[in-house]
Image 1 (cartoon, one colour):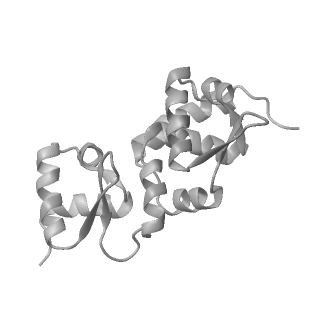
Image 2 (tube, one colour):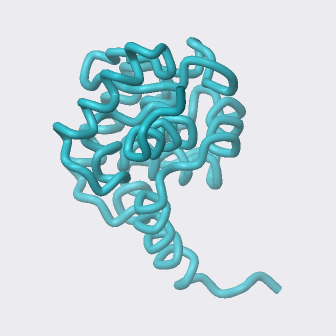
Length: 175
């Protein structure tokens, strides 16, 4: 039996953006959190989605076909957060960056960057080179593969593209 329309929309969002939590799914569906959770509970009961608690959020993934592997879900959960996504994409482009580079280029407060760098380092997502005091992605290939396969939600991309434009808009074209 085919799920009702709002439920299908939420299932489609989980399939398109695996790893989102209830609040973000509700935002993407333009629905209340309560209604989104109601439909997610039915999708869980029908075994169409899976829920994984990452310690901070309960994240939802498609139960069948095309879902990220268990090993990739930790990285996906990180890439579903706005600031870690910005840091990851910046480091994919630049390979490494200092705290100051990230603060200046991403337009974030020093304390925000410090908090996220520390958390990402503890999670094993980033590593810091003590000699150069620069941060690197621990597994850039996995990050690139996951971002290529499962894009961030539209509004996260638009916020990031504004940042990207600010960064690249100031540079002179290469000759």
